[in-house]
Image (cartoon, rainbow, N blue to C red):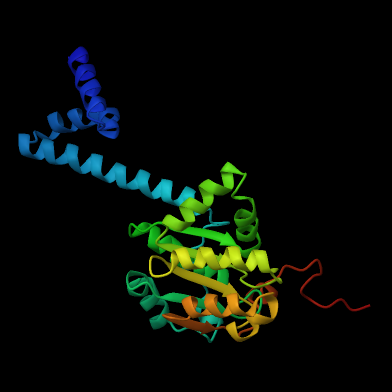
Length: 255
């Protein structure tokens, strides 16, 4: 019996059903215990293989996304801000905007949850079969400037360009020279009408031109970014400041 199971496992591996090969002894014991029919047994085998393949695909997409941390939209404290309602959060989670290749621009001061929402939407997209990439503006400029001679930069940019959703965090937080702006334009142009973008920024699009050396390039970038876009403005106080830890005791000390 052991030799037969081993042969079956080898055959499943040959058919690239690796997960089923690993789990086969357990599934066989369950089949005997519950007296499964041939149909039930085959259904269990295939269901298990498909489930594990999807789980591994999600793991791979999560690894490629390069999120700095994993925080879901469920963990976002919707009751502590006034900029988004629960209904609007749920609409964003449905990802119809992603299917229609709309962009999201999340504007506001540091600490209001822009990056958390962007990552939460990225996690939702990955769970639903989309490929997502996260990169800060500083990291992105470095990748663009080193892609000609760094294999690592080439690989990461390739994954960004192949993504259904690209999240660029802290957009326009620093000035760009003409070469950097030109490289950024070519990336945006490559992604245009192929991918959706989520951009987080402390400044609105009307102020981005001041940070770019070439106004013509900035106009071309904005033309592509603002074609189909939803802008969400956060005017709340910093969540991080409200919930900061203190080295002092909460109660005042009477001297």
